Image (cartoon, rainbow over all chains, first blue to last red; front, side):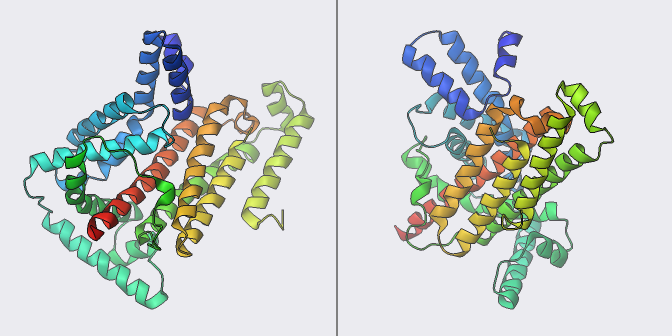
Length: 265
Length: 94
């Protein structure tokens, strides 16, 4: 693929790429262009494959092999994605990637062997969850589990993901047997019968919030404490000092509003 | 046009609301909040060049893109895993 064209697509989001692909398909023209867009869609979602593959690492299979299996799922998602589909591409792709990885693990083991240490850690994790729930009436936080189990928070997250991945391998067998490329679920209609999402979802969302908060801190630090004057920044960006000042005030107001609540902002 | 700080602020707010909705047994609304985080990140990435905050803060744009895509991946897998849970529930009921 020509480098200039690849660069042109470099920062496009999944949905924009899908939009462009839809345009090309509707006009039924320039198949080379469609190939470039598909290629970019694959490149753009390699991180998704790796992230999902890591959650299956406790299967005992090498990570590289799991990633390879996941790539097949991603390729299938790109090839089979219905452009008129209302579901997001990333949701559909993650569905097929997981399906391929589970399929791969099942093929390697007629019976899934869960390593002894994983079982032991899983049992300990369950005990901590029950203890905290009895004491506080809520699921434990990642930091609490880490403290009780003498692990780092990162290790706890890996443990939670590993437990989940092993559990679902058997469930997926029946589903995949009926349809190798099942459609993604209708997320909006989930849990319509009063079913509550599991407690580890809370923790995973909380971890994402922490990641965002860290990024927020770094951006603010870069904005206010990098030692440059407003005049210097203005000169670099070819805008007036007044404009620099205004953007900073707006940014600060925004941050204050989010941190303290709009009534204080 | 959303700037990076607004995007982060909105995302934190949506994710916090999602947890609250899950606690209130309104998971479908919670999933909507998760989806809106993905949608906003996608929209921001499309217009990232125009973000004045990013230019003023002199932060590495490439790194910001990678980190946002990683967060998008995290949220997407949470949504997808919720779908798995639903299948598990249906399989148990069948």
